[in-house]
Length: 350
Image (tube, rainbow, N blue to C red):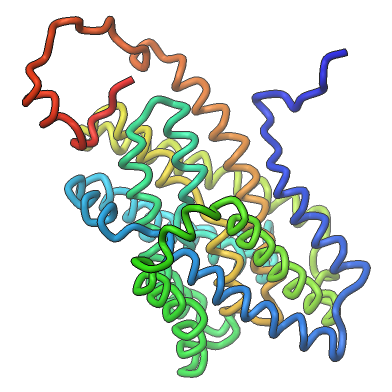
């Protein structure tokens, strides 16, 4: 018998199932009293560990090398931290007909978080785009988001984000920025260890996020905020997010064409500039929103799965475009010095 597989056009991320299971666990057995205090402390530590590992993984040399393609990175950053937030602000007109105030706040927060790294690289590679550019663009976005996302949230969300005081900013610095910088400083000593145990530490990453989700949704259950969300409102949220994703996919593709980027660069811009990071957004929401984090991250969780499904279909089609097919190989001998010079330029071959 053949083993059953998910359709290639419907890539349900197994991690999303774990996230949904964690939400279900929080709904059935939310942490209360002492257990809630323990979960909150563990969640705080998990967030700090998560950003420490981010800092330890990011190669400073690779990031500096990637600056040579600055036009592409500026374009991706502009899409992530300018165009997305502007669309989020424009969606304010949908409140309260399509979205409640809480869901709109979560939608606006979703537009402020950085881009993804892993999935942007994977889809860019699948579509035969500029993979080195996607790696650098995703890394730059994640790094910039540690500073830009809280600042944008403080400016655009105001009191909806739990109130941004000096204590809030200090908490952000201590839980996000300080661990990241510490990871960068220690990278020269622990970088090889991180590389050797990449899979195990990846499980630590994901486990930390699950803990953050459980803590946030437990607080939401205890406070009864889930009674504010109805199936009709969720359907409205999904419709709004579908339009948001479609607009960003079109803008990144045709906008980069208007800016005269190559096809490979346009692919990297589309996948890095139209997506939002669940891994970065969840911990940030926990810090910024506190007890209201469960509703704040719901739009991000739904958008994350939607972008994976849609981008997988687009990447597959891009790989089948006539333009993406490799030309006949040039069998003319290349001088040794010229061959060595070509190495490391970041030009895609094959």
